[in-house]
Length: 438
Image (cartoon, rainbow, N blue to C red; front, side):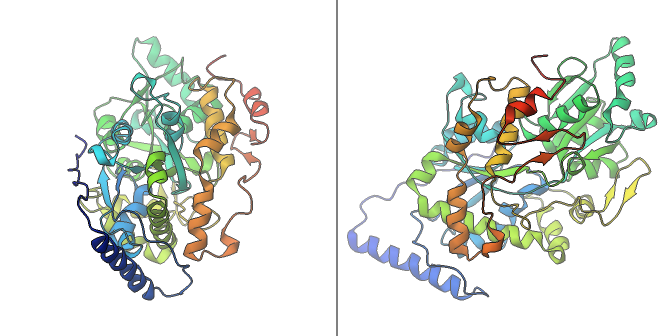
């Protein structure tokens, strides 16, 4: 069950004198907190309109920036001591609680699959197709998801090349059995990575397998009892699968697309409109947490923190390896010191490139979630609020070299040689052999 939060009563009968005193106290708290900062590079920021917000997260390593911001007192540091970071049971629960909003026992924002704000904004995944105005304000991480396969397929030698599963899947279907490929939310990142990988290997994800939805923390248990043949999910669940000897990692998503965007920080548009200063404070806290998470010397402490019961409830040993780029694939393949570890800050990770969002929309057009006539640029401009990120980065004192000059990272190349030019998504879609309309 998704945790429901008691809504605080509104402030009523507040006198002007009390309001001024409260505002002064908040300003004093901000000033005192910033006096402790090492660089002194932070610009003065107006006090947040509220002292708290409700932010959801799924038990995944890439939610670490929110967990660390809470654990390290960074929300408090930027004037929002009452921010709650609340575990959600699934991405569906995250969606439902965002629909409610924080003032109605739901949440105001969340650690979220990058395409979800777009799917919600357009009403594609909401009850009665009701649009929920959303904003994507930051990226939380790059890389470090994975595609894992049940142990019964180890002899196929499947890895980055999914085609090695084609005959095995066909044989299973010929026996009257269903081949199940699990992901975490239709149209979400894991759905798209899984589909891309299968299609690149000549396996049609709509015809040759049955895709099913399983919440991330339930992936290992479901594969253990034979409920799926392959799944795509974030860490630490792929690493835990290997440690339990239930399956193996065929490929990490960084091998599919090096330096790919993954989770995002999404907020209800209504929250931003009502609380622009609080939005900036949340962004600054999360961005500073991302900087902390990026430092390799912090990885052991980070794994210990996020593994706690209230966060992921996972042993540190199931988290730490892939955080550092040490990958035991579980099929007699071990790689240490790779650059496939999860990235949180360096290289523009936190900045929400519009070009990346364009790829996710193009892929969802490919698989029929959006109409072929969708104006990708217009939709991205509606939802992606990279302007808010830039404002927060400026106030945070982020070095100019760490702030991308353009909202496009340019042309992207995938492991199978396909090229995505954000200026011409149609050419990319035309180059793909397997798609929903085929």
